[in-house]
Length: 598
Image 1 (spheres, rainbow, N blue to C red):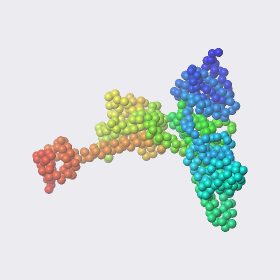
Image 2 (image 1 turned 180 degrees about the horizontal axis):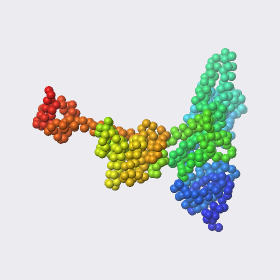
Image 3 (image 1 turned 135 degrees about the vertical axis):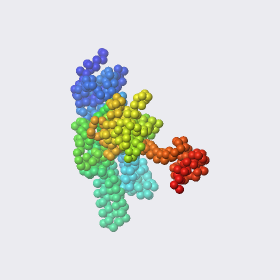
Image 4 (image 1 turned 30 degrees about the vertical axis):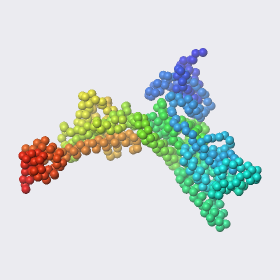
């Protein structure tokens, strides 16, 4: 039987919750999605106009739709996640990082050993984790080793073998790290009490261990065994110190998973914090590559399912920054205030920090990818229609109206292009008039680029507020470039960004890459303009005095300045020294000019 057309497939789709898969004409999987109502969701792909170019491309390639009906939305989430990981469809969010994480194993044996591992063996042993780094595992194991004496040997401590004296205590016993169960020097009941306390510590519950140690300390003190009491007191301090470092919120917040997300143009970062007895016992962030302009909600839902699967999460309650749909099996809370709100904010800070770290790493490892992401982010942050690969920034410089000049600096792909920097002497404006000066230089700059057929920028930045921005816009309007080049103004005081015709400024995140590049452009334009202005003032001051001497021309002035380097040295030079540079006739004139009063 021939495969039915897409129209027929759409009509026969079920209206149940489940998963749908799209395949191309070659049978290659394109996309896996989940839905409360498969028919309604899939039909929307073919009836809506899609803003995303990628969705449009995918829809054109769809040749077959295969639905899978499941019992609940939770099952749909899990199935979707498993199918994405198995098939890696081209148009699905790509989950990064599939490494094996370490666990803490409590071995299924008599007098159990406690050790780290990356391998899970189904032999009845208990595994706690996974942990996001061996550093966390080692810190916990060091804590446990300091509190409890456990064996490290791999002997089979069968009661009959111990009775027959088959084992001898090792160095660990003599160092005080083990109590010698191999020679029946420690009772199994006492050892197992220690193992139970270790289970609670690994889960983040320190209360029972602290209570037990305090009872022991009091018992030793009552018997006048002060050395033993001090040893137990030291253990209590170690445990309390570890607990104080890990406790960040109200101890009543117990057995909760916290999730948050930050995203940019191409990626989403989902952070996970696991809380037990008011302490964070795990923190992890995953990176997810967007394929179809997925929303933060879609990414967060997928991230939550992936992380809870990966870390065997079974907490009955989840805190998130906004509502998500994960079915009825877990309670979703969006905290509004107090400690619960603070812990969600902490998760968001962790996600932002992770994103910043990825940016820094990418800058070093893959500069091209970093530039692409920065440009895409700037386009989104500044609401531009194109990525600002070529940006030009203008700044005026004048002091009390003297020597008005302007500077234009150019950034290409987020970096200074110094060969393209330009300086301007203000020609048509008298005195200090920043608005008129800005209009003049913007007009002159782009009139010249148009005349010479040079590349125009995607973004113009003017240093100043609404007034300077209006002047720049006016110049572009005269040239017929209004609307063809984006232009914004940045006001110094509060780093406000102004748009033409909009009185309400935009405020960017103070740590954002977009604001950092705009500030760098503004500062570079200011530096370049001030340097030009200072040089012009100095040159004017020198030239005015020397050129005012009758009979002395520009070439003589240049020769004198080249040799003597300053006006002061020219004044102090003897007539003979001057004559060696410019000849006796002109030397006499210069010398007489500075020494006639004497």
